[in-house]
Length: 446
Ligand code: BGP
Image (cartoon, rainbow, N blue to C red; front, side):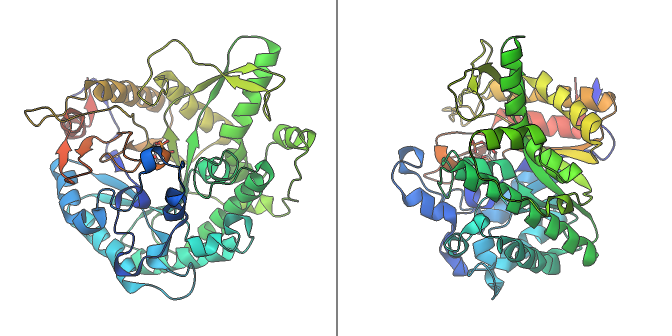
């Protein structure tokens, strides 16, 4: 028996997202998404990279599923490209595009791998963005229609569904920081987007229940917990605002049907015109699970000139990954316990966790990513501690299956446990993939 044994039937695997791996952007009737458009604008993506080819997963999914099986995976989290399935955003279904996901799901099931499907992982059809995208309140209807197409086709075969991946990134990284598609920099607009996303999420959950789709429905949030840099009251305030932004904003909406009052007050004080949030209470639909994406925490120091949260992000003198993300697994343990205690969360899955390192294949054809094994060991154990303390966690999906198109960093940030050569498209399992195969086999680690 391993020293850190996980619960029976614990799901182990990896996560990916459609635009990051599929490539085939013009194949079989897929139309442009906001990410295809965003990548065309110079300066948006490191060294001008795009997801045009990425891992060519659309044409190589069988090979990929076979490799997952070989590596012992029992779960796989992926997302659907909306513009592949509904090229006009709404209306006519593209049967070929939809069939791809049906075939992928069959392939996974016959390999003994449980599919976890995310409806929306950031690649909105450009035609819908042209109508205002998530700022247009019609997006709730659009998302319901899109959800229905997938429930109809895959309901029963897919048992784990997520509405959205990281609404924080969709709303704020895409519409406030402007670092992701659609590249808007407007705090007010991003708050409206966050509200509409929550309404769309809840509408999709209700539809799932009405259609009596068997299985579980949830959502995936990303968390960047904040610590005050010092014990001063000012630093605590700066940290509290960042916590409101990066933890409580969506958790309060989903579990309490409200947005945090201190954040609403701050936004008003900062002169932001807020929506009326008339339907926010309806967001608190029961979900079956919460997907937790966690990479790193942040430390905040008060700065009266910093807009809008009065905070500067301070780098700590601890180990970081090559994306300069602090390695701090205690935060994950604390976060899971806190989510349970403060929100009475249902069961949770770690739907993303992992690290980027500039891995290369050696002359002997190996990838010796010991730093990743170290990172994952520390985080697996932290999750194990949270489970021992009574948090109901049912699975762990590492980001990512293979190196892929990492959004603004393109191919220049490698998160995979499988190495991907972007020129030859060759997949090479890294040492971490073999190490994880043993963890899965033993359902734990020492
Ligand atoms: C999450 C996304 C993933 C993945 C990961 C890595 O925010 O859900 O799609 O990309 O982060 O980080 P980054 O996208 O910043 O490279």
